[in-house]
Length: 267
Image (tube, rainbow, N blue to C red; front, side, top):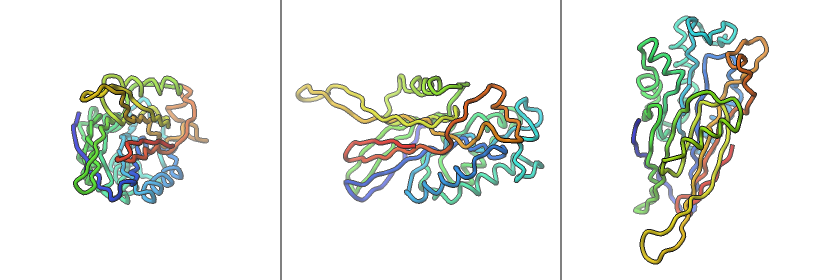
């Protein structure tokens, strides 16, 4: 767990700030949707988005792993020193995103396998360090401080790579709802389940000072998407073993107007 702060400057009262989740890329797998990945990175750059790295940047599946299948190894990468090759490849893909636009980089369960089985930490010491972005561990709270001159607005973000197996959209969304319980945050982002969904709404309460009155604040929650196609001709994927349903590849994005206290989402 990490507790961090990100200062996000803006110039005008009406400015919009975009925050995208980018993860579950699985570089090293032959099923990576590179077209969707290229489109997503272009969208981030063209729209000046801030980015939360959601983990599972690399596939990191070696022959002694029960999920391993030689046909699922991406032929564009040499299999010798495969972990290093995957790290180098994903860094080359992500380094066009300016370092100041990264909010955090989480680790994922695929990187965690390398740490547990091979005693090698790759997310903090390799990917985040080389991209010069803050490391957020597996889950992280971030205080987002939007600053315009002396004026500032604050939103609280909770980001978690995600956990467990979920096959259907309702059970995937349940994990997002479960993570929301007990957390007083404005934005929640979760990956891992290979689903793309964005929800925005409001939380209601009562004023704590002055005349009692109803108050509302915007909230947003997101399953941040992925780039791994589960069914590819000539590729024997581990996702096929439990008949994983195909799902949309790509990213989701929050659009925030700090001074209007508005949050919109799109994917």
